[in-house]
Length: 97
Length: 402
Image (cartoon, rainbow over all chains, first blue to last red; front, side, top):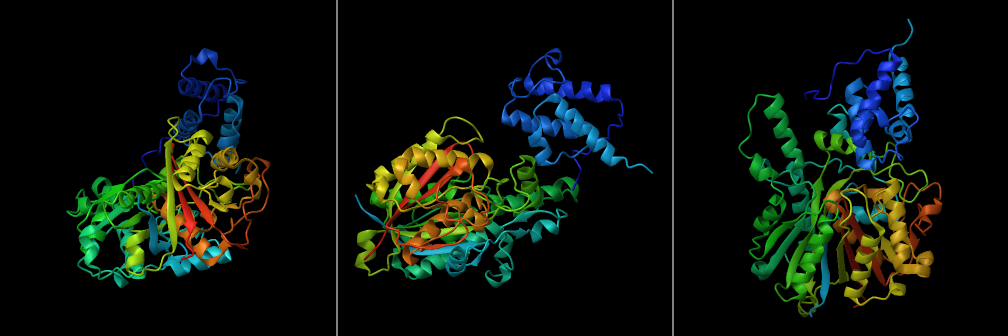
């Protein structure tokens, strides 16, 4: 079975970079300009539909090479929630040696 | 207008092969949901589902025939055999007048998935029997061939309402006098790698089990199987002295015309109203509803609202259970399996429970018959099927007292 969605894992410890990527993906999902998306923007305020939210979670998983559990994905209310979850997933993946 | 009797029942479900196994499961409330062996073998260790286990196709089909039969067609044939045998129609001379109307949501998806894997990631070849194995109408064709039924036959598809729509269609054909007998229902076999991954990608699958109407419900659990009923013009059935299980009294269908995945209470309520009107049944006469009850947060909340819209005060006294808690969601087969469940409930005088129920949800404040079956006379019942894409089908049944 081919791993179609196995993208190179983004090795980005840089918080600003994660934030800008998430903002770009959120803006694309909400069909708005990235300048309209802030860290504290709420998805319901951005008019994100339930199906677009599913697609956004999928695009984020692909872009960052992570798997976001359903309960985590459903807990996302704001852009910051996504960024925090990505930081948590990143630190869980690189244990201290 | 002719009346429609149900004179034969057949099924394959996660409870096992046959109506007896289904009846035992409904009475005991024992959920058939468990780790899925077929997916574990493909590396998805944590998949749960209501799988038909211990099923050996070679015990049911000639080796020459098996290469032509996807699992969904195998299930349909086994259920059709049982339904016809029970109806006493196996050797009937009526074959040219019998309609075969079956529903399926995903058809030969399993064979299709395996063929795609070989094509794209294997030796690049395609087996010559992929087309006849995978076509949506294959199960219907195989049933006509096995029993030599040369009357009207086709396949209905409307996602999770498929077999309910098939039953409604067959009912209308008998009412109109087009045919005296119909085999109707449907089958699906959804436990293939690609389809499971696609459901998981929608984030609709429960990680633990199916808990309809429970506050902590976390999604649906896939199932598989077939339900096939013999429908018969009531006069015809009585003239030949057939045993009658129940009357298929009404059918209601609507389209939400709203959203490709989210349900609408208005559309669901209207489908129930139409089924009641069609069957000449008053709301207070309905004594049981077999809910669509998938166990997703949204389905059960919206369905509760729709039932209250239709039944008003009576909704508080009306048992509404979801047998998907026991049998999983068998997709296109679900409507027919649940129709069989309603018939068994009427005949054997009990209400099947909603299994796995732990915590009440104020947004689903119906009597969902938690965990234990309830001995009860049921004079009339509804079976709800509300598909993705807003295609709603509701079957109204009346007990037959002879």
